[in-house]
Amino acid sequence: MTADERDELMRFLRELSISREPVDAGARELIANAMAQNPNVGYRLVQQVLGLRMALAAAQAASGSAPNPAAAGPASQPATEGAWRSGLVKTALAAGLGAAAGVVLADQASSWLDAGASDLDASDWA
Image 1 (tube, rainbow, N blue to C red):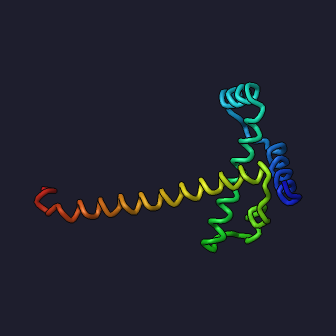
Image 2 (cartoon, rainbow, N blue to C red):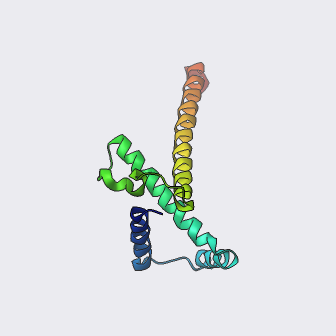
Image 3 (cartoon, helix red, strand yellow):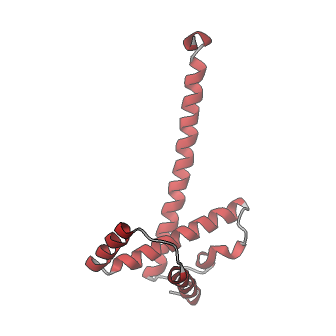
């Protein structure tokens, strides 16, 4: 983990610790049980969230809608061989691929619907 990655992790953990949002008791219990069974669940969860944040920041920067180009955080730093970086990058890539696949599927579905609509004539609606 680089110093910038550590700083980003610490900022995120501070955000979580100061949040006063209400929590769902059932969800809290399920999460606590999962963490009791496997202490790595918390690690993986935080890694996933930060990876998704990286993917979102990168997508916003690419589209020009990011309020701050530096919002990509650790993603702009050189890659390291650590497990932390690997998990973040995997999550960011998966999110990006998922978003890209969603766009492709939506475009395809739209073209199918357009093609189906053009095969219908006005008498079909009467």
